[in-house]
Length: 387
Ligand code: SAH
Image 1 (cartoon, protein in one colour):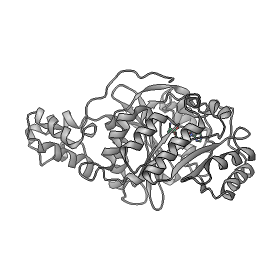
Image 2 (tube, rainbow, N blue to C red):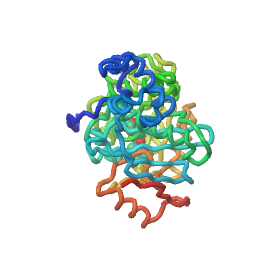
Image 3 (tube, protein in one colour):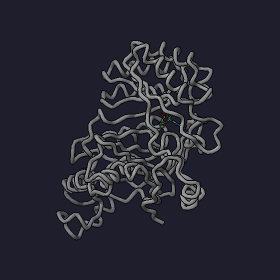
Image 4 (cartoon, protein in one colour):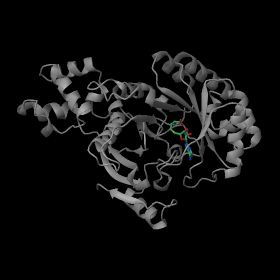
């Protein structure tokens, strides 16, 4: 597999641990085990990790407990928003300087947090900005959960336009290949979906794990017996093209990936999402739509078409509206449920495949984005920048 993980470990955090492990950790620190439950309530229910808020803990041990079990893992470096504040991308710096991004998207009926599971990505898909930079390291479960908690906190405190709200959906579609960081992603899924105050209490059915198609890991996920949605980034129905667009296809080709996906669908009863970025003259031909339809007809599935989002230096562009309509129509004609994903966040490079944790410094990049102006009608707002 391309890329290597640098062996740096983020500090241990409550969200890395299940309730029993947390109690053991609290006891190790010399306090009663129920301190762990109090801390969990602060973090997952009250969405705070500030010892000053923890008045139910003895003043003498508050800082120590919070410092040991709720260390601050991510620091906001930059925040960009668009859609009148309803879409916000945050660039985070981890303890070791690794940069990751998360995106909050508020819709009338739901709020989706798109989270990163790795700093960078080792899958090397040539149309994805994250894939171009390579893998820096896996994130810990708590670093993943922290992205959701930050969004939940901003919503709870009314910092997102539209009034106080909650995170209803989590999608593992930020930076990284979630199934290449299996153990941490699974732990994060548990923390996100465990009932409050053990976790954030978001329904498993509202969590989506998206993968390039790591077959053994999909099988492992099937065996977990969870109700999370599986999304497979297919992007081509034929191995010839998919080998190029999703290089890991050379290891696990289309037929094998889909077979494993259908096993997931059969075992969970949940529709598998097939992600397909429409790239002009590359994978958007009517014959490929027919070929895709042939692979999917009669299966428990749903196709999410994504107009390719531009990435720096890429020779590819999104399909023409006419080709997209034709492609959609051919799938629909075969009875395959198909939707076109919106390109939310594209003007702040926060849409699918655009998360790249910019270097040179984010400052410069924000300035550049401003100088060239937004690609969409809404004005670009730089709502916060933490130096
Ligand atoms: N590694 C995982 C999850 C992250 S990407 C995966 O590949 O599924 C989330 C989705 O955005 C994937 O379907 C990915 O293929 C898609 N994507 C990547 N680059 C894109 C781009 N430039 N335009 C549109 N979609 C893109």
